[in-house]
Length: 179
Image 1 (cartoon, helix red, strand yellow):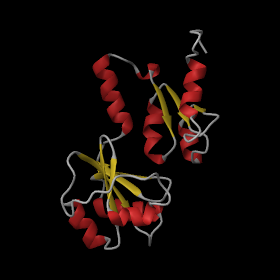
Image 2 (tube, helix red, strand yellow):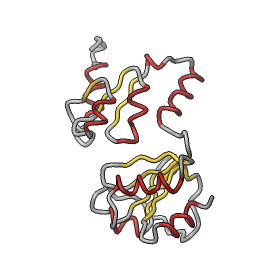
Image 3 (cartoon, one colour):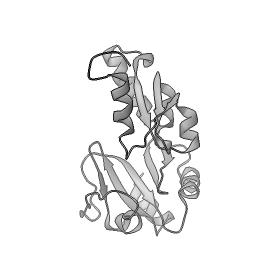
Image 4 (cartoon, helix red, strand yellow):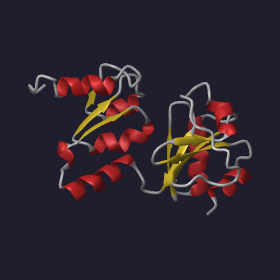
């Protein structure tokens, strides 16, 4: 299925961005809708050409809230893709079964590490499975309630205020004593 063509026919006002393993590449349309809400990202100026290594598509529509857009996409794609909403109201689309938890579980299996020995942090709906899977999980301060419910603990500080570093400093103090 050509996701771009399908989205263009179903949602002619949709704005797209492309996620690779290393970065998010916005289209000009996506930047026009979400540019004031998110950190500045590189603009993909490849026209209809997809960037190399795309692993997810971000879909937004200024005429539709993120949750409504996710419901519509879920109906249209009937379980063939994994959908999550994010803070600013767009939807992340990845292949079915692709989650942060699945990738971490695969990595841990290859390293012989059990879930109970893992530490995960999250602040969005795309982190829910990861927070439930990890042995030690933290929802960032300010995360939506359902993210907090999926985690075992909460950070004192938000992502923007170095909440991860704050927890790591507590767990692994510079003097070498256990936190």
